Image 1 (cartoon, one colour):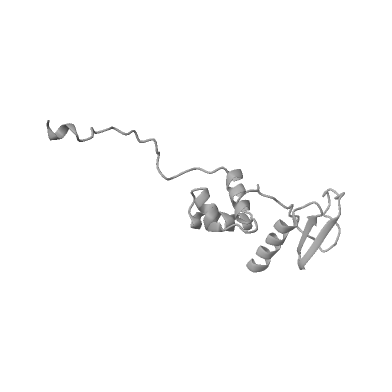
Image 2: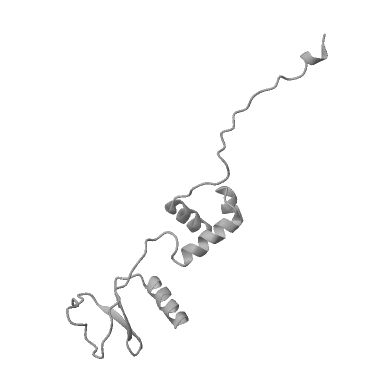
Length: 131
C-alpha cells in the first residue's frame, strides 16, 4: 500500500465572501443603535451580535445623536426681520402656535409648536456657537 493513498485529497472551496465592506440601510443602523441603548445592553455585545466594530457603533450613535443619521433633514423657514414685530409683507400668517426666540437686533427664530424641539435646540445651539 502506498503512503499517498491515506492522505486526503485536495478540495476546491468556493469563496462566497465579497469582502468586509457592507452597506447598512439607515433603518437597520437605527434599529441597532436603539438596541444598544436598551437597559442592561452592553455596546460590545450588541456590536458583536451584529458583526459591527465597536468604533463603528460609537460613530453611528454619535451621528444619530446629532441628527445626522436616521432622520431626514428638517428645515425652518428663515425670514429677514425688519424693525417691526409682525410678519413681513406678503408672508403667510401662521395658524399654529409659534415660539419666537429673539437673538438680538435683526435676528429672530420662529419655531412652530409641531416642530421637533430637539432639532430646534440643536439649531439654536449651533447659532449660539457660531455667533
